[in-house]
Length: 458
Ligand code: PMP
Image (cartoon, rainbow, N blue to C red; front, side):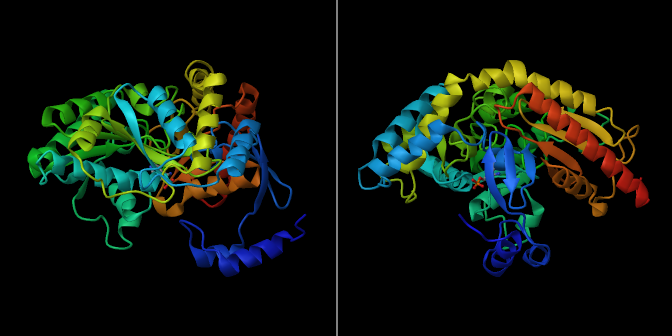
């Protein structure tokens, strides 16, 4: 039994631990919140406060906390073989079995997987692999990868470069050469003169313009998240992805779907590309593959690419110590089987996803909310200054952070991206729990509205 108090934890944390995406000085002044345990969709902190985790940890704990099957799978594998690698012509049974299972649950063009330890590493693999592919095809000058502003593809040099977060690019001279960005399909942020569908086509055609500007013979791939997650749960218009597919096909460019958030059921299909109707050549995955119980990521390699790598390849000089980690793979297998056994993907598509959509549609009536978007078990509420005109708040006011503080203070973990309040709850959430979440959201919106009035911002 650990007897340290919250203050002890906070002092030790501030002295020794640098957190991701954190202003270290400001956090040290405040002290971190210490999360000590979890069950189902709830977390508890070191002060005993209970929190409804509407973000599934960090978009990953899709089957909820405390699942015995996953704990047992990890324990058994730790006892049998806690580690061996897949270098030097060796591997382990869990890595093979997970590869087999992934080939079954992914779209039919995927028969091979390359494992990594995280989503960022998966996207580093994407950069190496698409360039290797074009080298082997005798077109090494095809090296440019096109991504989108406000995309999130991870935090390594390649991941952050593929991503379109300006704050990340400003630190450390990113993006690395050969990665360029086009506009994102964010209709609400546009002048809204076009219909959503027209805007979707326009945003997709920015890809074609960029390809023509660079020269198709120099472009290796396009990468996108089916729904931009960290960018604010931006659900693209239905016209967007089919047009992206058409453009990639027309110019012979590889299409990469970053399924790190959308994979494993979150959108109501196994993968987001199935929900939005496109056929990627490569897919990055992580998070939901193990429901976050243990780190694992990777790249699904479609036959178009796999054939060339395998038949014409020679050695692909790339890989990680933890590629195919046996404990992570054992948890991945147990997690996918659990998703299958409980029919969670179908549940998101036909039952709980539609219920979340209904619930969010009702929240759209709140005076602070300009629009809502949902897709499967993901949702966004756009906070606005003027509901009728859709006028946004001045970004400097950080209204989203005001709302997020009320959420934390009232037992709800909801994330703010600018003034977009977002959720990605566990796929196992019940209707009663969605109702419970909605009551908390409404309360926090009311409290935010009151505070904005007091401050004279609304
Ligand atoms: N791609 C996407 C779409 C993501 O959302 C994330 C993480 N939020 C990543 C890549 C990076 O994954 P990781 O943090 O596991 O490196």
